Amino acid sequence: MSYWVLIIVTLAIGLIASGYVKSQLSKYSKVRSSSGITGAEAAERMLLANGVTGVQVMRGNEGQDHFDLRTNSIALSPSVYDQCTVTAYATACHEVGHACQFAQGYAPLKWRTALWPVANAASNLWMIVLFAGIFLYMNQLIDVAIIMYAAVVLFQIVTLPVEFNASHRAIDYMKTLSLPEGEIAGSFSVLRACALTYVAAALASLLQLVWLLGMRRD
Image (cartoon, rainbow, N blue to C red):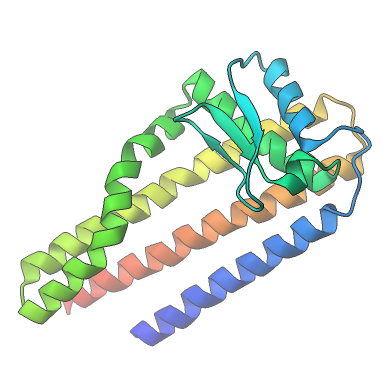
């Protein structure tokens, strides 16, 4: 596979995933939840239902919904925190899923947390090391760059079960509330679309790693 083909394929994967996510989030952000509660309230209730305490639910920046295990807090964007929609409900419950993972010592989350410092450093340096190896004709540096990039790919792969499990927890909780089947299905569509972005990123990175290994053999 040529590098330009790789670039086109990975861009296509990313664009398709991004477009699908935006369409699902937009679609279900217009569907009001029959629960009558906001995303922030949904998060608080799911935390209580799972016996998880000490987690702060706060209003964050738009489009930056996340659970921060360093502060044991959940940040929800205004459109999730304040709104009573299927998208808001599903997104809030997904982030609570991560808080539950942390509280219960979910193994893949521990692995992901342990890998983060290495993957973060490698993601910023591997390309510099690769180009240095190519420029200086030093295969040892190229090998180091590939190992560094492999750490990034491993981090993305480990992220997948963490995200899938958080969504699974969210859906399981919503099923206990006797919500209409249409809302459960809509929530599943939202969470599946978001999960697709992680799958797409992991697949694109894996293809890049395969190309690097092929280049090294050549």
